[in-house]
Image 1 (tube, rainbow, N blue to C red):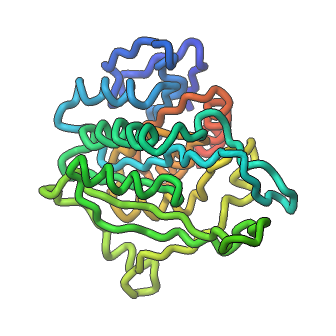
Image 2: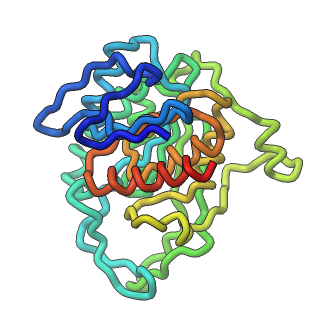
Length: 289
């Protein structure tokens, strides 16, 4: 294993982006904080817009086979929810606060348009979200000329109860799967998906529990996804050795799933606490293989 600290990291020549010169800005350090050439993992503490601009500039034909994005849902509005049997405020951080629908949509257009350019010609992107953001994401995809392939309903069999008793219990999230454009010949491992579904065609409703205690061994991320959910997306739309990007890496669940499935991973994350959490999880994942 080859670990480099946040202060002295320089990505190796094996890094698919190793020759990409990154400079700090008022928004981000924009530097590589972890790399492992053997397993193909590279994590950057970087502003995803600046990072993607640099990728697109260096690789105008695209670089990534797949992107998974779990962007801010903009739902930290002072509401309440239930966590571990207790009433808690919905406040995930400044990064999750809404600045109004117009500005929120501008942000979605900004990162999605860059992701589209960073995809290889036949690459695909998966984006998760709740009703707070997913409609904007779908519209932005249409505006940029992406081809929407499916909308997946992630059903949560163990959702927290609705404390206000004024709404149905929120038990799903939507994941939109889209190709780079109408000309893309996207990868879909149909036989594998059918095998996972006991020989039957897989439907677009997937049931996965929230991340287990084991998946949160090193700490909690407020929007952490289960590894099994990300693994299914990667299995469906990539092949071994493909390069996967997560521009909102969080606790690097996408990186864990990529390691498990022998894919390469590039992640970007801004928040130092989530960088630390990612490092713990990625190093543990590598050491266990």
